[in-house]
Image (tube, rainbow, N blue to C red; front, top):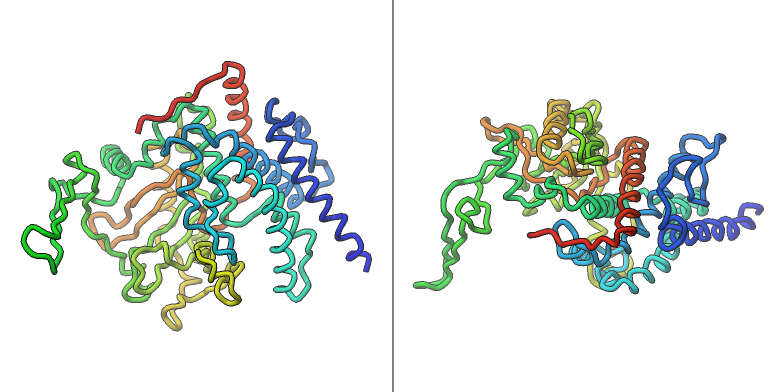
Length: 451
């Protein structure tokens, strides 16, 4: 009875911390002062103290980082982005096929203006947090803590979507305030393949032919002909041989299945001060996920996401984030869209009865992690995060290769050392806030990156 009586007060305190912390960094003292850590922090909410256990300390650190970067998204909004004319355009493009599960509405609808985006953050965040907390409470047979889950969802969310957007905001801030370091050029797939080849990085092979001509099977004469000029000849298309899964990867998949990659995330401490010489010790592999493609799928974007232990290579349980990509108001109907999924829901591949995936070990996981860490150092040590799509291929000449990189990257629900991740972001934000204050003083005009 006492817990029920105190619940509204706990929810109110959490909501107050959210609004206070957000506006502290949006337009308050935190916007115009250095980003300080520990006891020196100007952040007046959720201050760390000596009695905090490890979980509480990480929660407070995560909350400060989340609120700072969330507020910073509005600073970035109309400024140039490293792959688009503005952060707004990149945001709209990235959210056009993503919806809060059960709503069916693409999130891009709410970020087309700074006013609607701000209104959405200030209203949808607490509402969705409360609904999610009540939903979990019901799903767990009324055993979960509503107030604790609400605090997590609102102040220190730990879902894949929030971590993805956090990485995007850090990358956007970093590229802007450091005048678009050259490592961000790797986002261009052709630049990545060309530079990777020149620097001895095992990348997916591409063809040197001038181009290809495609003819529709039911069109006559000169109709239905399409010309694709190869990037090697100044065109816009990268023409590659088909890459096949290795025999080991194929043994974990249905038939037919798409090329199924491993998403590995690395972070670079060399990006904090881009003028210092980078060392491979600056690069850390955080997570690894096996994207086991679904039967008849075109790509592994339609997949079961199996977490991989980066220390041992052991494949853990699988899950999915497909419910975040269900658009259309029909997905608001009961049974049309799951509101959440849980880690470890799948131990087998759902498209093949009895096909065990969890419990298997990825061959030479240490070699894979060494490859991506060295590649991050060689190609883009001046970029904070890189998501690598690693292929274990059937080609004996290139048994392991890198398909592409993603610099505003997604963990795909992989687990990682949260302390290592948050400490790196904290140290990065100290430097970025200092650069932002310098830009404020000099009234710096940010120029778009030449595309």
